[in-house]
Image (spheres, rainbow, N blue to C red):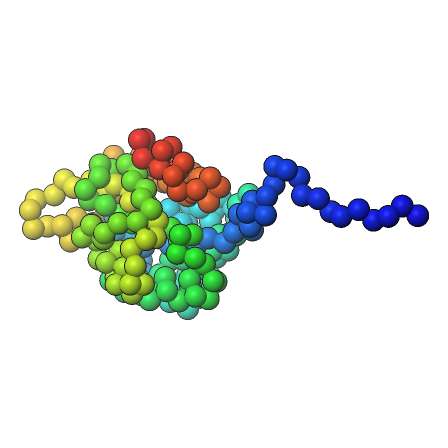
Length: 209
């Protein structure tokens, strides 16, 4: 009988690579619960996650502090969260699901609206301040850290001074509604890229579009 040989890993697949294949990510889309907010600019995080889940035929269900679903993408596990705590308390849901799913902070991606960016433009960063966004502010305050990746989705800023709240809680105009599916599709591809190739390459690919 021939002696058993030790199982050798291919040279192209290191132990680190194996860990990456099995990585788990927490993808958080910010918004407000309730039908009255569903089509507002402030809820673009929910919209992007709905599209991401739909691309894998995944369905959201009610969970603690938020609606959740789990899907796979190229060997990775993605836990999707739409916090139902209202925007200003989003950190509670993020902290709970990070702890429950044992996800490291660098594998958390938060999707938010941004009035400082033109409609549909994406800005992906590995860390940073809240930029005046109440949802991000609460997450940073709750986690006591700002070193989590985030993707800002531009909603434009064409509103009179003093009407910011009405603008972000308002509905898309007719031209935006026509273009929104394509813009959301790009955001979904950016999330898939983040999971597959990491934050640096994803920033290079999508921050210029």
